[in-house]
Picture 1 (tube, rainbow, N blue to C red):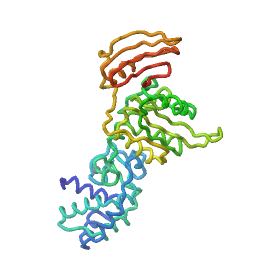
Picture 2: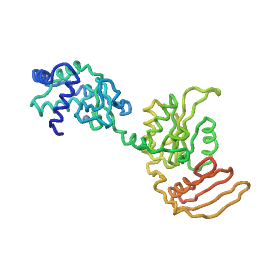
Picture 3: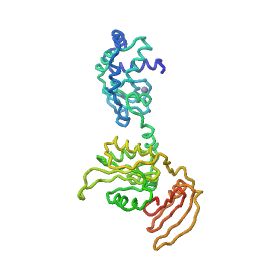
Picture 4: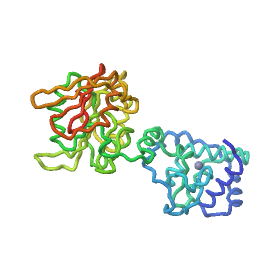
Length: 355
Ligand SMILES: [Zn+2]
């Protein structure tokens, strides 16, 4: 850490926010009391970081700040950058911020800041909160899931209903059809996790935290760019809506990490687990971007009763998935099937399915 002018400015900036004394007077006051801190460890023990998503994004409308402000920790300019609004309790409760400030004091003034002095600063801070940049937010927020959140923001890429490679359950009856029919007929039952969610929005937010779910720009519905069976539908009781929603993530290529990420997202958004089947730790994801359509070869056309099967072969499931992504089927009883040693994937009027 570089305790340069920049850091000094950061302190001045906070003092300015405190809006109590001039910077010099305040610094003088700080120098007066020197107490060894004894409460730091106690504070450390009780500070629980909330997930990053619970912090409001700092913007120019945020009370007390105008566009062009700086990070209240490191003083870097926030103009055009992403930053977060941190309430004063969280701000001052953070043991990392406390030790950052102590370090700073020590480097600049050669003294340690006492806890009581620190608490006095908190008391004197009448600002509505602090703006904190992305580099400093880890002092206040649990950023362990950040990679996942970044991925799910899609970097502005738009998705459409036609990008859906998954099977979506929109209604209880659709889900029942799967559990009592399709799934019963599968030799190997894919792993899954199922939660009860307090609302549609909570279920949608949880699913969107996973990198393979997106909201379609044309339908407004959730789509999946993996070969998964997923659901978000209202639970009914005696045919009446209950306001509660059931959500499902399932897939033969759902990895253990993804399974755990799904469960923590559901729990974060207030879900209660209903049922689960944990995946094997050796499961590898089948991703469309790993597939090569040129490795898919035509085999035969089969007429069976009223159904027509156009059959292809490929070495890998990913190749089959990439191939089927760009195929479309508009008539019933017509199936495009790709046989692979890893399993067969097909497409019919309802979308892509696994045999
Ligand atoms: Zn900062």
